[in-house]
Image (cartoon, rainbow, N blue to C red):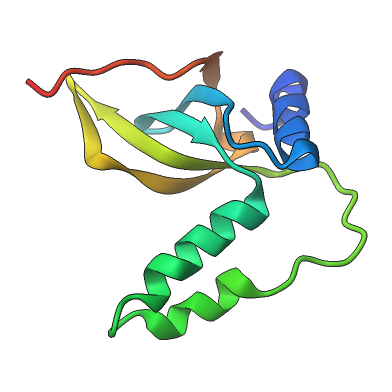
Length: 121
């Protein structure tokens, strides 16, 4: 999708404005179906930074995720930030525990409200 779906941009904007992480969404992007909950970018960045800081080998990579967003940011979101998310592969969700994914809105070709269920085999 060369131009993001306006309705999906509105949903991402509401998640950001309300700082709410309860919106479940499933998206289709090239090569994957991702299902999970949306998070505000700041919350997503902090969680990724925490995971990186906890790693002896990757701790130094936490810095870009903790950099402050530009003050007065009013631009529309360009990405969806998923947490507790899984890539659906057949009847499995990968990873088992859920992951953190950043998806460009322009790459979403289809979407639906809610998380799609999967089975563990």
